[in-house]
Image (cartoon, rainbow, N blue to C red; front, side):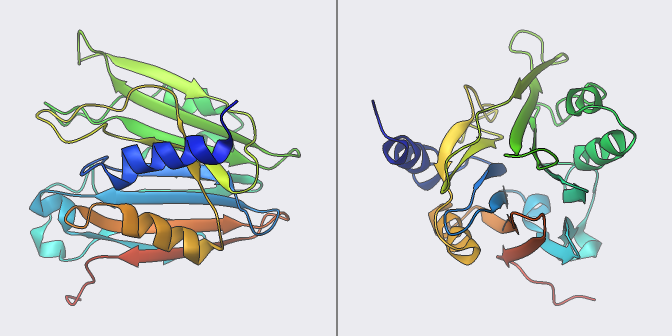
Length: 246
């Protein structure tokens, strides 16, 4: 049997460290230094629009915002709330479906029902997948749910929907999705099951570990949310570009 560290390290090296463009990515897992949880989220960019962004934090909410608002042509797919919370529920996604999940769960609906109202992103020819995740601590020991909505291979006007409920990972590991497999034209959507990935060390160490692994030319912003065993959360961010325009 291959141990978790070998699986996670191999996946991390292949899909994150050695991959010039995995696109946006998220990881949900268990912290290694306490009984808490970890959410990692990053954005990358190659175009001027994608690079004109940074993360901001307001309480327990993570948002993307433009570095220079005068350069924004279409905010619909690049400006959004990336992390939101409800009591015992912690959400992350790569688009405004974070708000869809928040509102639906607040109304008593389920994760899948919320995302049934959404499609892959309409950015032809890439049709970028929508990736989403939830940590649910309302019942112990807690659970992770991951989703990817991506264009159907034979007809990109249709959306294929995949939801994953992996077993609760051991401390120091998590499960992740990215939007793309690699660079390409068009960009190839992520395929396969969620990746087992490392989440080892204090939150600031996790942040540094992932930031330093992402491609230096394409990384834009990265955030790590740490959730204590009693449900309190803190956010740390690293931005490549900071605003000097107000």
